[in-house]
Image 1 (tube, rainbow, N blue to C red):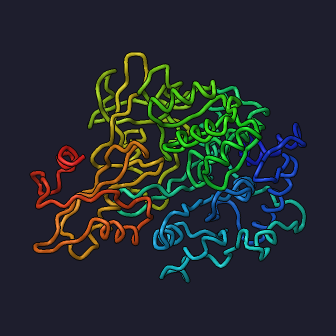
Image 2 (image 1 turned 180 degrees about the vertical axis):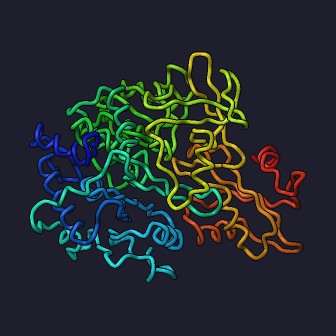
Image 3 (image 1 turned 30 degrees about the vertical axis):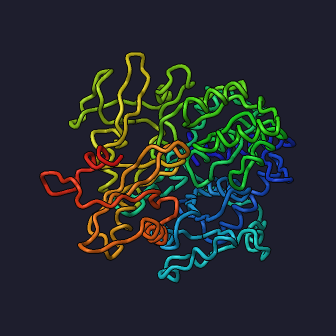
Length: 501
């Protein structure tokens, strides 16, 4: 660590010094103080160091939300290691690809998800240091041992070093590891701390998965403020409402349909949720209005990606209903044409971003990284425009980066199409996103079958679900005799969406 460096580990140390007895984590009936959190992180860092983890090493974790996630983020920051949080909703083959690509030195696995490690290449891609979480064998606790004192600090992270590697949805059929830096996550989180006036008195409801950049964003915001993180293993409206009431939750992030179900539960049980001050996310206008009336809080609209450390713009929803807010202060956001010329307000084009919150690049993919960073901008692949008053308006995606966002999860059509086309009687397929009242957007497959063949919609859906994560399977399948084509012979996705979207 150099003169200009700072990491989450330093923040944990500060919190332990200035508010040691204050509550850092709540998980079920258990509470952990800032002082206790720092001690656990130091012990874990020592154990990881003894296992060969150092600056630049990858550490994988496959688990639902738990305190160990926070311990690991702290220990990795102390050692300069890179955390690879793995989505537990993926299939064994998808998880196998990530492990073979990231090659973690250590993998921490919750007992529930050990069966997901049964894939053909397991013997070569699962690290020898594969430790269990939560099944009573003590392996993880054994790693938290004090060896010869605290872990060495000589190889600690630099501000510009990689910190978290999140595998994004697969544009071309395979996920890409987006490497986020300490600086990027630090500054993105600090924007929430600053805009919302967060202090040690504030509490985040860590309900989004901690493998998701949005979940990490608010987790880090609470740490930077010196506040509390209430960790929910997964989302359950009854538990969430109880935690909001008991812990005085003041902020969190949600995606459809979380908020509506939470409000239903709070209303049914007459629970006061007015401790909430700020909520960041995406939802429909009726749900947003209902939330602000019940909580007396502010709903903030936002635009961001994993590659922008989770956030590029945000503002109170009612400032400009329907917009994605104003660019955050650490970055510059523009809209450009196909030649990367900056467009004036009112003109639609690709959203591009630059600044210190932009990710380091795609792991082991220099060509894709260079293409994304061309002309000195991060090209998001998303379409939008600016209004005269500086608000960003999201308008969809470029055809080269077609993306379906269902309930906060990113799904790329190319990945789903590949799975659909593995069915022996499917001749052609085009996967599109269609509006959905519950999830915001859902997945629809438009398929051409081989001559004389038939298959039930439900059978094809389950076939796809057996090959990729179930949240990526189509909700609807339409069988047609032909798909519209472009002059080059490729499927015209825009026309498919016009006909069947």
